[in-house]
Image (cartoon, rainbow, N blue to C red; front, side, top):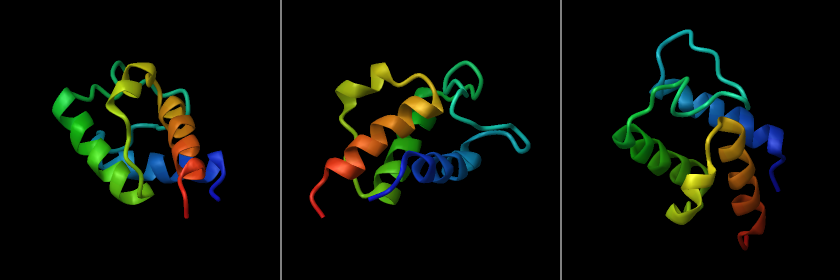
Length: 84
């Protein structure tokens, strides 16, 4: 079982490859406005997230994800609800 903080930390590390060098990442970081992720980058990021956390992110949940913290919360639920 992974904690929210562990997932958030891993997520920020993973997102580092999708943003400009030196850009700060945290739970309140807005994925669209602050990171300027295009829809293509978001889909690439989701594939990496699914691989790293071994989950499938439901596309119908994505409209509720605005910040890195929102994504970490969703992943925390998916990771900890999935059968081992």
